Image 1 (cartoon, rainbow, N blue to C red):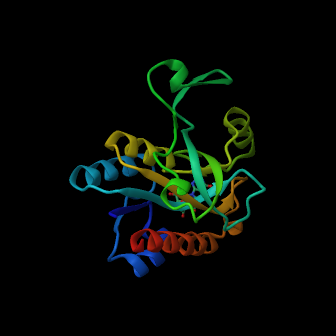
Image 2 (tube, rainbow, N blue to C red):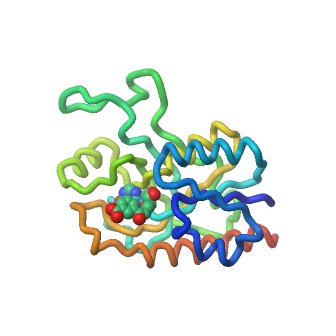
Image 3 (cartoon, rainbow, N blue to C red):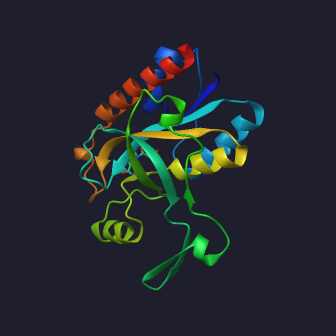
Length: 206
Ligand SMILES: O=C(O)c1cccc(C(=O)CC[C@H]2O[C@@H](n3cnc4c(=O)[nH]cnc43)[C@H](O)[C@@H]2O)c1
């Protein structure tokens, strides 16, 4: 089983690289949609994989999730792709020249049914939300549970390159008026990597 791990920063997957770096390929793209899409296109043009895993931290709109929770992203939307029409937003889909909503090519249940994670719907943004009025606006429009800067681009690249992909994220912060002191990146990275090391070990040993 050939596995590619895709992450925005090396910090997010450092424990997994220490534990399993000789058994899987790891692509560190840099943060954001463009580096993710470009990095994946280059890597997947030159290599073949059975499974591609996007691992990272994320902000949560949903207060039922706790900091450190590890979640499977089952839908991801390019939240800013469209046009403003005064107070309204017209999605790229409605405009008729693109798609904004993407789903994974596979699922945890399909890949390894012994493992279970709570599911979440996410949005992908260029600008991390940190201003209450714009948070309320995006919640009314899309009702997202999570936010990252790469997820939808990951799903898009998987689909374009015809590979099976899955996105797993751990909550590092709530999406709220910017409050960097309240982030718990350390806990999110610890829980994410504990889960991912366990999952990848099981997959490659079975
Ligand atoms: O210090 C900051 O303000 C800051 C802003 C965004 C991301 C970071 C990171 O250190 C992590 C990079 C990675 O984290 C994802 N992420 C985490 N929380 C959020 C969020 O609330 N909204 C969007 N993305 C988030 C993102 O995918 C980044 O690539 C630091």
